[in-house]
Amino acid sequence: MIWFTWRQFRTRAAIAAAALAAFGVLLAVTALTITNLYADVAACSSDCAGVTTAFLIRFNDSAAFPAALAAMAALYVVPALIGVFWGAPLIAREVETGTHRLAWNQSVTRTRWLVAELTVGGALVVAATGLLSWAVTVWSQRLDSASHDRITPLVFGARGIVPVAYAIFAFLLGATVGMLIRRTVPAMATTLAVYVAAAAAMPLWARAHLVPAQQHTAPLTAGNLGGMSISGDTGAMEVFGDDVPNTWTISNRTITSDGTTFTGPADLTVCGPNGTQVKCHEWLGSLGLRQDALYHPGTHFWPLQWAEAGVFIGLAALLAAFCFWWIRHRIN
Image (cartoon, rainbow, N blue to C red; front, side):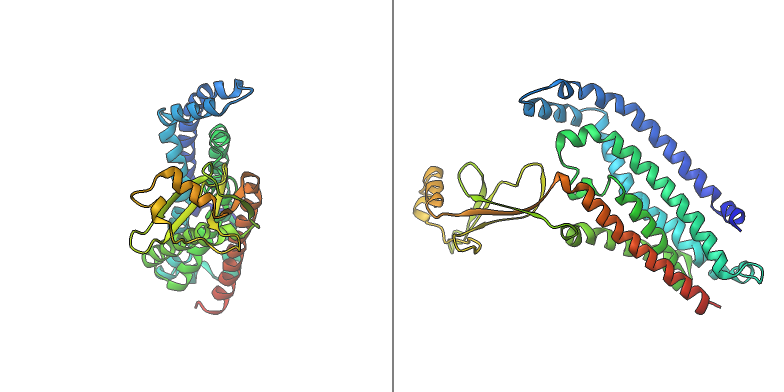
């Protein structure tokens, strides 16, 4: 049964292997560019901020920059493609064409058939996305070290083990949706919609709470004032401090001495059209305002990776269990 299942997946495996090989060549070629650009940063021993900034500017102007964008896009798109083209047709195609009655004969039970399909398919998913994510993560090490942004939502989802967990979830999601809808094309469309919703919900609402965030509270001064806005009609005022450097800042507000969010009203004589920036800053300094920020530092990268991967692998396990129950009791 394993050999028969492998024959079903071998074309997809060959396409995935060819795509990985082509992408590997792209990364290998551009890796030399990054190494050459990073030489000054590697040799720097003190006061390296300017050298690092220069490296990032040169990187953005080099041929490696499009490769970095392509790598990030690939790690977001590949799990969705796996769910749509590998997962959704897995059961839906068999039921839609009626071949499930032949596949699930007396010598091969439907449970054994599903075990083989999910095992072989899941192994290929892990191998393909694991190799891709590992290659991109290694290739991006110098860039991530200089920019300190791998903890930020956009970059985080294209590094480490999270893409592998997303791909496993997408594969099982597609199989489950296909089993329920029983038609291949509608199952593919539904899988894509549900996966995109789940993948977007994680960084927007859930990820920040997977690991306890750290809090930064400091007096608000002209040195850490990020900006302000004033309503000309009501004098309502919004003031915010600079984000904590090299972190993923998830909340940044200005509070008064009693801990409430500062909303003004502004003193328009010093902060209005006839005031000056210096006088406005002096007035703000006299209010005793503080910056209150919640953030995840770079050291939270791997704890967040393991936590998020655990969430999606857990969801995939639940979907697999549901598939086994449904295929035994509800499909004839």
